[in-house]
Structures are given as C-alpha cells and as structure tokens.
Length: 298
Image: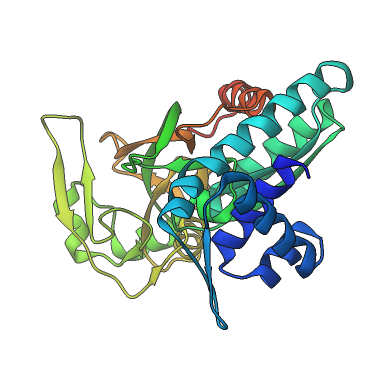
C-alpha cells in the first residue's frame, strides 16, 4: 500500500483525534483510514496510536512521527506542484489570512489582480482581527499589521503604515481644533481596540514622542468603523492611513495635528518556518509587494 496515503491517514487521525473525523477530512471511508494506519504501524514495527472507545491518542513513537510527517507531506506536495506547474502554470488553492479592514481595503482586490494572471489558482481568504494560528487553520500566508513575535513564523516586510488623526469639519467647528496632543484630553476620542494601546495615542518622531491618554463614548474593534464614526461627528479617530484614505478624499474627515508624525507600524507577509515555500506562494508575496508600491495606502 502507498506510504504517502498511510502517512496522510496517520497525520489526519492524530490531528483530529478520531478515525471518523480523519476519514471525513481525507474523503475516504472510516474503515480505509483505520486500515492505512494499521498498515503503517506494521511497516514501521511500532504502535503509533492508542485506541480507546472515545478517542485516539499518540504513543511516544506516534508523537515523534507527527512532529515531522506534516512538513514532509507539505514538501512533497510542493515538489509535485512545482514540477506540474512548470508546464501547466500554478494550480491549487492558496489560503490567506488578513485583518478585516486591511483585507477588505486591499488584500481582496490584490488577490483578484493576482488571480487574473494565474487562472489555475483558487483562493480562500480568511478575514479576522486576531492573529490566527497558521498551522492549526491551514493558512499558507498571512498579511500582518504590527509586530509579529511568534518564533515559528518567517516574515518578509512589505512596508510600514502610518496612523493619522482625523475628525469631521462639523465636529471641529463645534468643539475646536486641538493644537497639541495634550488637548485631546478635552475631546471625544473614538477608541479602536485593535490598536496595541487603544487608550494611549502617541505622536511625533522618535526621540520627541508626545503621548496622551484619551477617552470617549465609542470604542470599536475596527479602524474603518472608527473613521466612519468620526465622519459622522462623534469624535476624533486615530487610524491607519489606509483606513482613512477614502473618507479624507471625500472630505468627510480632515487631518488633525497634521504637523506631528503619527505612529508607524510594520506590514509583513508571514508564513510557517521550517517548510519549503511553494513557488506560487513566493510569486504571491512578490506580486503583493509590487502591488502595494503602486497604491497610495501606506
């Protein structure tokens, strides 16, 4: 029996903890999944799984194999895909993760532009403001705003985005225009809970940073929502420039404290360390970097 099928059955069973769940994931029968694992154990001469009436657990030998087998299968799939792609072009599905606002504003459109060049590819875009577990959720590539501290990830920096302070002309006419960061304590500030420090806003260049603790009636977990509320006169929003760009262009909001540089944070493409990066993923990262340079987002 094919060793690859046996390894795939073992990995799926070990990761799901169930022959039934593994069979559903692989698209084969429960009986065949169990058979593949038994044949692999016979081939290796060791027991890999502990079977009980409720669940399936790993033996020490099984744990050792599970630590290496998924990467081995990924590399094999990548090798086969690259050989096939040499004559057919890129094939398969790329699973991408991004934050909600940035995904809607740029990533979705960028993927559509990339897709036009590669008709054999499909895309699964997952938008979530939390930093998802790439391995657990099967994500090939994530676009991350802010610093990534996870040791198991590799990163290519694509640029930096700057925050801008904005408010509607109507709000500023009613409440006055802040002349310095300290003036924000007397204003309604819309808190974006996705920021690293939602209630502490910093302005100015390195070495001359002015920080202020702010408060307000509204707190949201979306930069776009914060800008929208600011546009309706509900206060000041401190948001990434890409989230405020359209509202600024339409005159719904205007810059405030424009002479002080806003906070900057990196934008990067991240993927799991320890695996061969398929050519189609490398091509997507290169395309994303070039596409971003042609926009006015950062």
